[in-house]
Image 1 (cartoon, helix red, strand yellow):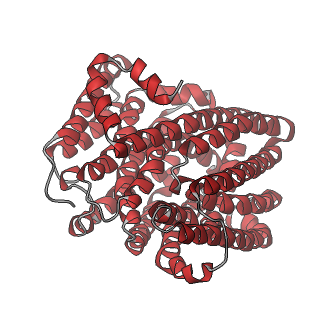
Image 2 (cartoon, one colour):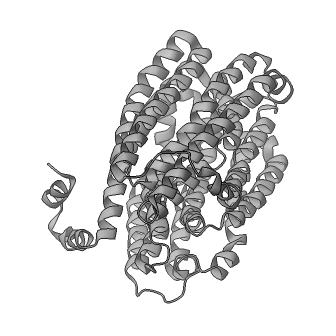
Image 3 (cartoon, rainbow, N blue to C red):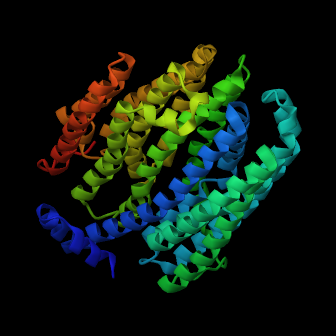
Length: 504
């Protein structure tokens, strides 16, 4: 039975007119199909990943889980250089050129794969050599040096994974990607659980490396199949003519990403060097797990939307512009309302060792921060589709300076102060760049400046404030569905209101 027939059979009567409009639009059908398969594979993968990390946290405890978090952060920092923005480059150009110029799309795809292998190997070598110095001088944990060297292996495969998954997204091969995510997720749970059970922190890191290697192998085989199916030749011949793309798009994309992981790593290092720092890092890492869930919900729709936006360049589509902004924002904001209302769920998952007001307040601030980041995803996709990557780099550079400065001022307050720094940096950075989005006319203006948009932010702040005011669980249980209903209605108003003639 096909996805279309299942949707038609299971759709409630009051939603069938909307389903009919989706099925009547080729573009909406492509987006719905991509979103479905992206969500289907990612839900299984993330759910099993979350289960694995919860088990890892319970077995390792706060301090050891904090060490695992700083290892991931360090690998992520080097990984931004290793990836060189090639995943996003592959998505944009494969989506834009696979029909217009398949030979050129193939050259760019092959070039991206080769450059990813080279940059991955270079950064892996750098991490291997610098591991003892990093562990001793910056992390105050010399015993982590061998595990950082294991991270060098992870770097190589992560760099190649980025280029491959980007190309798969450019082909809109979301069903294929869903299957890969499902199998990688299914493998992740037993790998991580057995690794930490038998080898503690060391076994956990090696299990993570093995899982990323498996993921690369599955991506490699799938990309070859999709390229043959689309008639795109996977060859390097003539790719030298495409090297200018590395400067125009890949380099600013990489530099934009470079502002993220190293900045987070520097700020994490500030936290772990405080008294009781690894305990505080464990608290922050646990709350960040929920942040990653919200990012996952936003990224689920980012996968099909970026290639659709790139594929539609030169053809005005106001409806797609509106959906680009609102869809991921709604998928991040609505779960945030639930998490604001019921933060006790986080404590139940991670156990009594993470209980306390500090964990709860840190959790609430990180969920709010996530809502801001997910809102910005729509703006980031528009900038990426139109090739404005140098502007994206400038935005991230300003954010990096803000986060480092705020962390330096507040890190003495532990995980709570660190979470305040995150919320302040993201909120101020988003507000500062509103004039740019208006001037460049990237998105419908009402998704930035309107009564509905303002009220959505007000509802999110209200949901978070109820906990800060120590409102009882019973009242929060009653108010959460009310806030949820209001937010849903506001999003529907933004989606269905008369199309604006002005873009921001």
